[in-house]
Length: 181
Image (cartoon, rainbow, N blue to C red; front, side, top):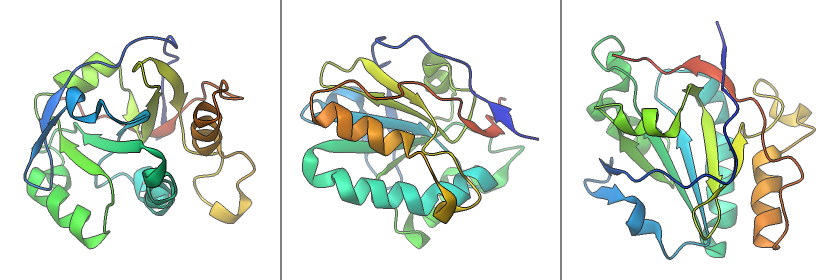
């Protein structure tokens, strides 16, 4: 059964975090201060909604890397109840799928709660001042990439890079619920 994200107040500051990543390093919010935009997504390994969007997320990260947009995905799921979301399995998936973004583990779930994250995948786009400018989903068709009519996240990134407000600043992310401990 799909879960929808809750509306979030735009303009709020990005919560601070320091989390281990699949590349063997740990990352904190300050590590990305040089980026013009910061995209934080809550994802995981096992969710079919996340899996359906992975290639599109990789394409977006590739398209905007040279434009100083950093992509981070965070997995906060309970890995006891969902062993496919363990840190070791995250490392395997990041390698096998050739993730070109940082994939972080929020084992304590403190970071997911600070973001008020509800589901996977759910995305938060922050401007240079690290104020929330877009929240929601990647696009309007998780099942059929060829049938997408609205590329919400891409449009939001392009607008912010051009110094404009996103045409649609908030959508309802739809996916699997975060698996709380």
